[in-house]
Image (cartoon, rainbow, N blue to C red; front, side, top):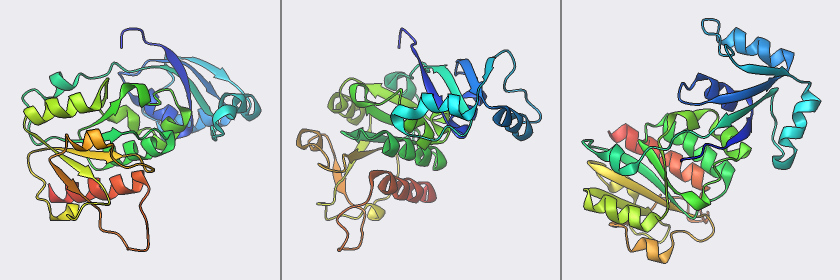
Length: 245
């Protein structure tokens, strides 16, 4: 990303996560007196507010930063810059046993944020998203990710199919998760380099993207339930693969 534009995030974990990330530039921070005390109380050995422009506001004044997305700021709002995105081609060089999640048509910020939180919790190596569809400045996404977005390699690509094709040529196996599959994902031996491809909740995997999958797999759930929320599905898969590895 050449020009690093700034944007606002809100919520305790999201803001503290940004403050703790040495790669993240925090431009300004808006706190209540109470939240400032909490920052110092929870991080007694490090002054996270050192050399920062800190502005003290009332809860009501902070509400205006969150009105459009209807989220709770908990007394924490920050203006931050985008991180420099890692390059997929550079990242995979000389690495083995990588597991990436890839999103095809998933755009809901809350779901993506929850999925990011699970990905970090269970040591997924990175997330591949379509640049145009990724809500990279969403307060909802940052709030749902609960600070974990600071610890995940996010690869914003211009074309998902081109990226999948490239990765297959580099010894990655692509597993498409779809309810139509006959094979349960727990029957796979998760070895080597793998891509876990998830489609949107409404439409599943796009037909032209399915062409770039090596295998289709499903999560075995109760027949009376149509489907699982995308972030729940991902958490189940990430946890299982971590246990296996």
